[in-house]
Image (cartoon, rainbow, N blue to C red):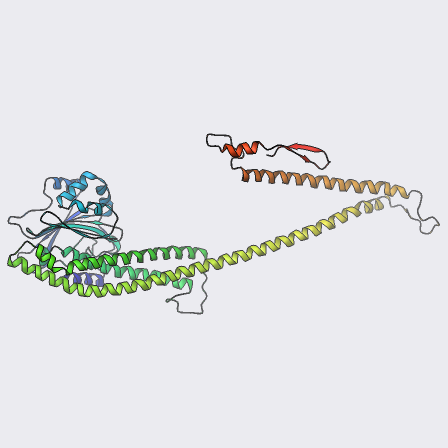
Length: 479
């Protein structure tokens, strides 16, 4: 219960820094001179370089030994960046696991990314491991000497949400008392409490994110003005969709982590198994063991209620996030419908423009038909029709038509030639584009990876005659 009280105070006071150690450190717990069960443990922290760490491991000098043996707790903390190279180095990894007396059965779980709670009976001792998004914690407990050897490797969420550090951001084990040195599951109870407060922080932090998305979309619990219309541009939509996907994933992981806490609780409540396995029968050890067990039971009663509430809150947050995902999809669909309408309007505008262009073309052709006659009538400025004479048509009237008709035909012929010439150029460009679409290797040299089937079929096409505007035949290749 002392662990729960201590972490609760740290959480309320805001004394847990949003930082994480960058160096490997060794934390050693020393019981005070008076062995009262509720007395605070005294801790000594040593920052240590990786080379020095493994030198001491090889020489068996990392964890101090006392004669006669006393209850002790020694734990090595690895930042995420320091642990990954060690995990990939078989020599260092084996040296570390052997020094901590970890069973090889846990090795695969230590190196994998699988979360869970595991315990294995080793040679006269038990091996434990807890792994989740905060950290990976593995330890051994010797029921004869009451020695605990442990290692903790920080993971992605340790920096922001773990309570296993002091207000300066240094690695720490809050709430441990002298009695906790006598029980193999003291670190499990500490992790369980840390996980519950981690869940609380996660729900609060992501709840604000969901609320902000609801205010942006104008739909949800955080929308105060139900009549307000929100402008939701594409950039906001992309950010919201990204956050929604992240939140849904986080709560899926949350539900998985909650199931892990249930297995830890079952182990903490299994007093009979651990009592039978316990090798100490002296009064002091049994007294502290029973004291610790009673403390665990009190804490578990409250933590189970809190976990139940967390699951309910998590489901609510998950449903709110999924609702915002549906709203974002509807907004995207509305944008798509608007885009389709704009495309239809553009199509109609193009058709109207094409019709106007055809009308203007007709007007231009009609104008061409009358321009030569008008031109020559003005040019000659001669009276070709004598309306006041018995013979209306004069003798030189043929001159007007002799110039007008050939000129008119010449203008139409020139227009036809120029128009047909541009048309052929356009057709050649179109055929060239079609060849590229039909043959992806068009224009490329034959190499070792050429699609010979396509190229041979393309080369096997026969050249076809194409008529030009003069009616003659012009030989052109298909390419």
